[in-house]
Length: 232
Image (cartoon, rainbow, N blue to C red; front, side, top):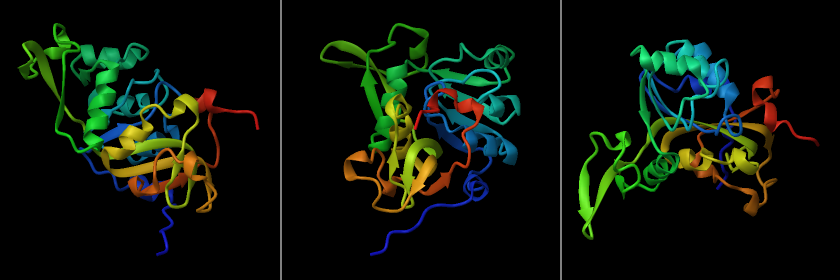
C-alpha cells in the first residue's frame, strides 16, 4: 500500500476550517505555537471561533491577531495575563473566557483524544473554576466532573515532518501539540522541514501520520517564533 502525500498549500488547508469552528492551537507561549497557520487563519477571516490554547500569547503575536480581528467568540485557556487586549475584551464582555488549571486543560484534551467523555478530579474544587460543574463523591471524598475536549480542527507546529504527516517536535515545543493532534477531527501541521517518507526514524516520531491531515512546509521562520531559532 502506498501512503498518501499530505503536503498542501497553506491556503487550501486553512480553508477547510469553517465559520464557528472549535480550533485547538498548540504551543506554550512561543514554543510550539503555529504562528504561520494562525496568520493564514487571520487572513481568511473565519469568525465566531472557539479557540482552545494554553495561553492567549502576548499582544501583537499568535492568537492575539485572531482576537484583535474579532474572530474569537470564546477562549478556553489557562491564563491570559500576558495579553492586555484579551483582558480588556474579557472585562468589556466582548470575549468569553473559560479558565482551567493548566494540568486539567492538558488532561481534558488528552481525554478527548483517548475517546473518553470526561475526567474526575478534586483540583480546583473549592475555587471559581468549579462553578457550574457537576459534583460527585468517590470513596467518601468530593470530586467534580471535567468534560473532555475535542475540536473541529487543530493547528500544530512541528520541527520536522515527512510527507505522510509523521511529526517530530523539539524539546518544550512538544507541549500541547501531540495531545491536540489526537483530539481534533482535522489536523493541520506546519513544519520547519518536510522530508521524504522514511527519513524520520521510528523513535523520532512523536505524532504518527494517521493523526495528521495536512502538512504545510514553512518557507521562513518569522520573528514571532523567536526562541525556536536554532544553530545548525
